[in-house]
Image (tube, rainbow, N blue to C red; front, side, top):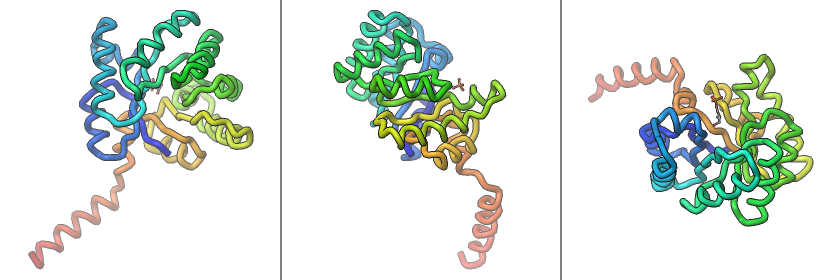
Length: 217
Ligand code: G3P
């Protein structure tokens, strides 16, 4: 399973990248706004900086919702760097645009996916990545992980080439469950990635080893 970080924060991207386990980055308009980035030029420069920092796929989201405009915007985003993956929302014009991008050699990440039906459409259109938002499903009283299990099954049976990119991660346990369910990629905030490191017995064990090491130092 590939690890992406779900942020536009450069310090957090650097920290995850320095750990040596980072395969890519996903952003969205909310994450970009959180960093105080304003205006198309600043947005483009920010994507460029991320692409220069991380050797992996970088999702850059369109903010248009009509086919022609999605295509126009996506072409500009894809021209920033070879590793840019154009993130397109799961709407009718979005599916149409994903097919257009597929036919024209531009890779896409279909975002805001909340059902198997939506994922099947995105796969048929040729999305490179499909992003089910498991945390937001959990937030609404359903079980996001059930969708990952279902998609892993459908994609295996049907031989779809799209990668299941589990998004809206809320905890280290989400990451573990995604690995168990067969997600191809998980995109997570830094906190949940670092949460995987933690175990109290590791801390207790290390403290004891270091204490004992003093006896023969
Ligand atoms: O990047 C899309 C997705 O991961 C959003 O997560 O936490 O806003 O539900 P969240």
